[in-house]
Length: 223
Image 1 (cartoon, rainbow, N blue to C red):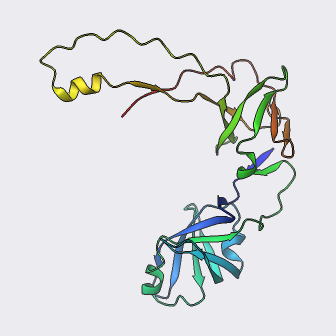
Image 2 (image 1 turned 45 degrees about the vertical axis):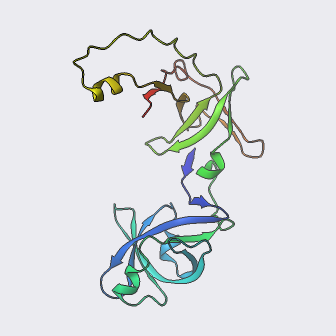
């Protein structure tokens, strides 16, 4: 089983990259990729450009492109962009394709956007465990699942008078409230643990090994 990151969903468009800087003097652009598909930048054809501050993309033609090994960057040439000044004016713009333009995946590969918000069930008990809120790339990709059953918050401890010699800043820090964040668990997205992924029914079934669903309370200081 595998995950293909795909492209980042932006409304009805897929963001495939962001222009970060000019490259050289002849209008080439450095683009940080948010796609797992090199052909988005290497095969000439129509793309769409969303300039900073704009709400509607404009069509552009990709003339050519090449990857920068190990950097997550591509160097591309767009039609009509022929100088460094023109390229610099596009800094921060997003390169888009329509949401319908999704490359075909292999069996047991999934777009990240299709996995988000799927309900996760324990196949052994039938219990609904939680909802996928993120996918974390790793050696084996991990599903971050927000649990339905959250741990009970600890009873507040009685306030202890603080020594007067503490600075006001230290007193304020000591009095900060503790905020309990929604508890999540990380589940390896491998066939042995997540044997069933049903996109139509919007569910994933897992067979968790002992200890996988044991979590610690996630507490942070309120700013």
